[in-house]
Image 1: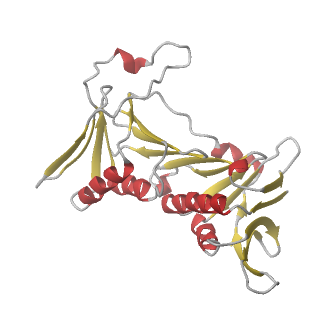
Image 2 (image 1 turned 120 degrees about the vertical axis):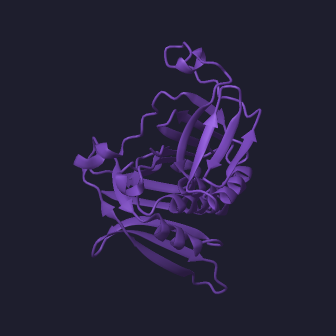
Image 3 (image 1 turned 180 degrees about the vertical axis):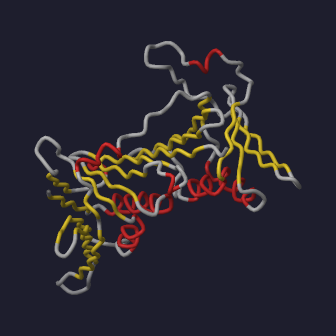
Length: 284
């Protein structure tokens, strides 16, 4: 089992750092899945993390100048590692003006991701800062726990307003309530609502547009039979929504959410080279 990779291009490096920062804001620990062409950061919907799950997918070719990996076996050419993304984020913070960053899976005293940052130096010798990030290798028998979450049949799918706007609305509401209701319809309208004994606040968004989802067999999903104006809602933990919005350092090229009435809100944020799915369960 081997893995080594190298980033030389500064724009790619900063981009990768941004992705890791976002992940670190969303998950204390997560699983890094490595395949020959992709990296995945995965958080499963265990009760311990409040039922939230995350699936973030990157094409390695968009970030790395060199990328070599040998999985646990020829017929299972993958590696699954559990790590604390904050540690990786910290290591990459030292690399903002680096000439190169190398990442390698090592096993001296325990399995580690060794991050070597080559910094520019005035003399001919280079300065290298290394960080050893402890990881746990996940055995193959547990890999099935980390499959891509299936997207259940949703009642409404809608494009999100500018995340910055949404973030400032949610941050103001967070001081008033622990939970927030997200409701949307098939007419491009979405409301964010909080209700407490003392106050009720609603922010309305219009003309957001609904993605043209069709179900697999070419006919429209059950959503199409419904009245376009009727709202579908889910009440979720406002902190979890705020975490997701706070973690977005770059406005995605596309952002949308799918709501299953009173069950789950599924966010999909697409960048040119990264896709992030985030599932927040509804509160009872």
